[in-house]
Length: 381
Image 1 (cartoon, rainbow, N blue to C red):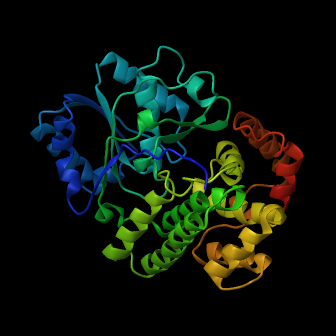
Image 2 (spheres, rainbow, N blue to C red; image 1 turned 180 degrees about the vertical axis):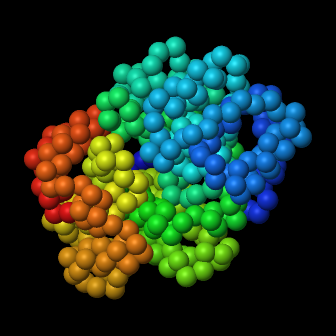
C-alpha cells in the first residue's frame, strides 16, 4: 500500500425530507445570498423547487436563479452563471439536480473567484486558488459529484469535454434523499449504474499498486450496484434499494477506493468524453459502449486482476468470460453496448480518437493512448 492523504470536507445529510432544511444549513454557514442552479422543469413538476424556495425564504436567504443546465453541461451556461455570481454579489452556489448540475455549480463557484477564463482550469493553464462555497441537493445518483471536488464540462465551441479537480469545490453540504430519485427513468437508472461501475473499475484495473482491501471495496460496490439496479428496475419505489444505490454511488468516487493505490488512470472516461462531446450521448450510455471494448483491449496488461474480477463478480475463472458477462449485464439493464446503438458510424472513429487523444495528452496519457490505440479500442465496439 502506498502512502496517501485522505481528506473529504463534504458533510452528507442523508434521508427523507432533508431538502427542507437546506435554507437552515446555508444560513448556519453564514451565507445570505446564493445562486440557485438547476436543470429543466423536472424539479418544478415534482414540487422540489417550491420546497427549496420555501426553505430559502424561511431562513432569509436571498437568491438568484440559473436554470437550463443540460445532461452534458456546457461551458456557455457556466459562464452565464459566473456572470450572475459576479454581478449580484453571490456568496455561495446551490445546485439542485443530478451530477451535471453539481458540476456546473462547482465550475461557477471556481470561476466566480477568478479574474480569467474559467476554462483555464480545465486545460491546466491555471489552478483553482479560491472558490465560492458549494451546496447540493441531489435528484440522481451516479457521478458522486455530491462528495468530491471533480467537475466535467463541455466547451461548446471547441467540442472538448474536460474536467477539473479541487477540494476547494467539494460541496460543503450535500443532501441525499433517495425519495427524490424515485422518478428517475429506467434508461438513466441504467446509465447511472454503468457510471458507478466505471468509477470503480478504472483504478481497479489500471493501478500498478492495488491493495486487496481496495479491491474488495470495489467489488462490494459493483455487486451492490448490480443487485440494487435489478431491484429498482422491477420496483422503482423500493426506498431501501434506492438508498443503497445512492450511498454506494458516492463511495465509488469520493476518494475512498483509490487511497493507497498507485499508477491508476481513467482511460474509459477519457475515451467516453469524446463520445459525449461530439455526439451528445448520455455519459453512462457512452461508458457502457467503451468499457467492454477497452477491457478486451487492455486485459493482457493486468490479467490477474481481470481474472479476479471475473471470479468475484461473476463466479468464473476466465477473464474473457467476465468481460462478456459484464457486457451482457449492461445490455440486460437496457444500456447500449455498441457504437451503432448510439448512432455513431464507423467513419466517426477517427474524429473520436483525435478528440480523445487531445484529452489523453492533458491527462498525461497521450503517449500510451495514441490516436491509433484509441481507434483500435473503439473498433472493438
